[in-house]
Amino acid sequence: MNQDEKKATVAAAALDYIENGQIIGIGSGTTVHALINQLSRVKNKIEAVVSSSELTTKMIQEKDIRVIDLKESGPLPLYIDGADESTSKKQLVKGGGGALTREKIIANASKSFVCMIDDSKLVKVLGKFPLPIEVIGMAQSVVALELIKIGGRPVYRDGFKTDNGNIILDVYNLEISQPIALEEKINNIPGVVTNGLFALRPADHLLVSNGNNIELF
Ligand code: 5RP
Image 1: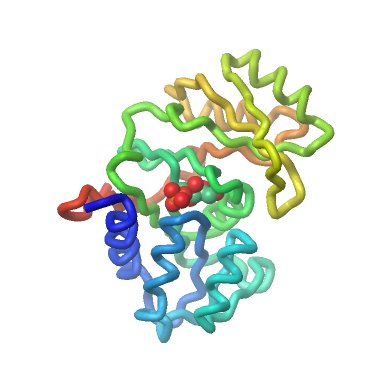
Image 2 (image 1 turned 135 degrees about the vertical axis):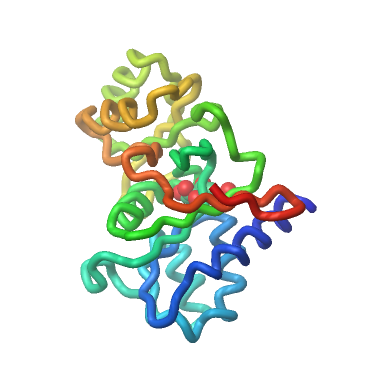
């Protein structure tokens, strides 16, 4: 099974978590695209979707499913999204697609967070994937200096602006043995909007496609 097939398989498994009449949150990225491609199968169960990115919004609307704002929906029963890395404790690195801030807001507002990955993303220690950080543009160099002080190598994501109009620094060389402490530390740097660690609010259900079946954590 190739990676696209693994994404389709894990996305199909995530559909089972959707219950009748729900307003659900949906994340961003190619695994989410695989989910959206299959969403018609459960369309009658979904009252509306709260979306984490402009692209997800467009794709959901193309399926004739209503997209509403989080301020209209309030807290959600369910959020489904992918990740760039996860541990078996369901602590994640996200933001490869740059939608981390809205993703974190919706995940935090949801009772249950279902995360879909393939087995290449299941790691013992987070940090091999560079940690994305959304930063206010004027703070780029000062935030970068702070990230160097904690042992990282920040790289400006060239030519990219988030849906919120900010920049992304991708931080290499971090071996993240204390994800909650690091998430809090980076959040406290003035100029940082969000970092891609989802450890304070990890996933509740991790679905891992290994090519043969779906492992549940
Ligand atoms: C976007 C994300 C994605 O969930 C993450 O990058 C995984 O993407 P993909 O499913 O394309 O591998 O956090 O901000």
